[in-house]
Image 1 (cartoon, helix red, strand yellow):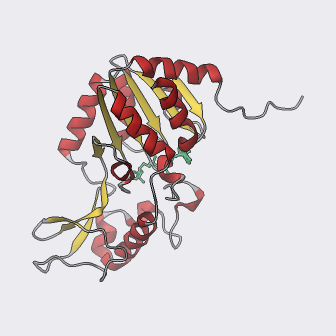
Image 2 (cartoon, helix red, strand yellow):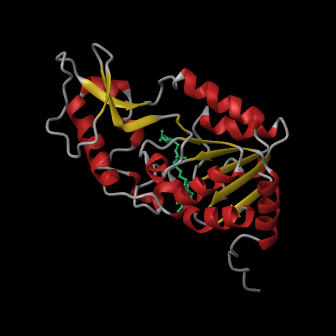
Image 3 (cartoon, helix red, strand yellow):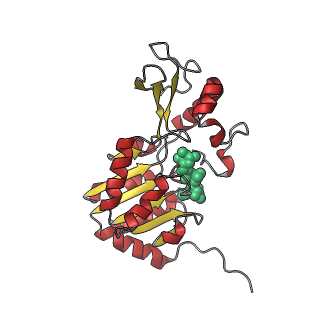
Length: 252
Ligand code: APR
C-alpha cells in the first residue's frame, strides 16, 4: 500500500479558517522567519541558517559581543546586506490587505528584517528588535542606520562608545512596551494567525496559547508541524506566500 502523498492542506481546513477570519473584528498575527523565507532571508533553524559554521545561539548573545564585537558585527553586517536586497513577498502584502479590512489588527513579529513595515503594515510590534537599529553601549542612544555594508566594524557612536545591534539577544529581556502591547492584543483577539515560526522561543511562543485561553481561534501556516500544531484549531501545511494570500482573499 503506497503511503498517501503529503497532501496540501485539507480544503475544509482552509474553508474553516476563512470563515472564522471573515467574522473577526480583532486579529492578532504572529510571524517568524518562515514568512521571510520566500523573500530570500534565511530562517534560523533551517539548513541555510548557519554562517561560517556559527549558529545564531553562538553569536546573538551579549557574551559573544563582549568577547568579539567585530565577529558579531561581521555576522550582523552580512545579515543586513542580505536583507537589504530582500523585498516583501506575497504573504507580507496580503497581511497589509487584511489590516485594511479588519477593524483592529496587530502584527507581532519575531523577525528583525523590517519587511512588514516595508510592505506597508501600519501596526507592527518588533518583539526581537530590528537589524536597522543600533544602540550605544555607553550613552544608550538609539539610531536607525540602513547602510549595508556599514562603513566600519564595529560601528562607533558619536560619543565614542561601541554601537551594538538593536536586537534582543538570547538571555536578554524583551522590550516591556512591546510585550505589553502583544499580550493585550492576544487577550482581545478572536483569531490568531501564526505564520512561519517553529514556536520554540518564548515569550513569543506563548502568545497563541494566551489568546486561545480566552477563546481565540488559532490558525497556523507552516510547511511542517511545530510545537504549536497540537493546540492550533487549523494547521495549514504550505508556505506563507502560498497560503496567506489564499486565507486573506477568501476572508476579504
Ligand atoms: N513559509 C512558511 N513557513 C516556513 C517557510 C515558508 N516558506 N519556510 C520555513 N518555514 C517555517 C519552518 O518550518 C519553521 O517552522 O518557518 C519556521 C522557522 O523557524 P525558525 O528558523 O526557528 O525561526 P523562528 O521561529 O522565527 O525563530 C524564533 O528564534 O533564533 C531566535 O530570535 C530568533 O526570532 C528568532 C526566534
